Length: 196
Image 1 (cartoon, helix red, strand yellow):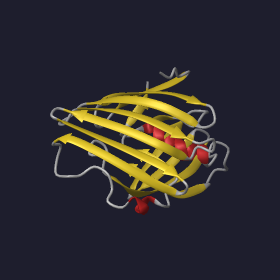
Image 2: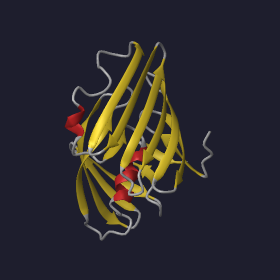
Image 3: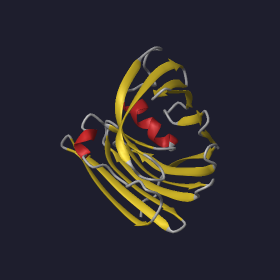
């Protein structure tokens, strides 16, 4: 059993819910989190995440459970390759969890767990955007994990330094100004979540 010294909690806006992440920063990030999500298809998400000392993702385990169904996914990044394993019980919808060819993720360094503000911190810290000049921009390919289906695919995102405590996020025509604290954790993600 791991005891974590730090936490962050968010109130989700859409879909409605609450998320709690417990973590430590020692030689990178080690975190565990849980979210309870309401709406038309209520579910819970449990995840554990580990990075190396440079904040590059090493492992993400996700377990999503709803009424009559459960899906799991494990992503591991080692020796420049991603390995993905998934499981499912019951029936959620017509989609399948995972990715047919994990080599499609070869350009990804970070994971992005859908609807999870914590995973936005990974590129912010890895690229040292906290101390970067205004206008610094990075276009990235993420290993994106859609929630609740746990479909996994490469996803292009752009992070731009807008000023103290502000990062611009752009993906597939969607743009948001993320408010971050002094450690790079999201405090406000418009339309998604607010730290509580």
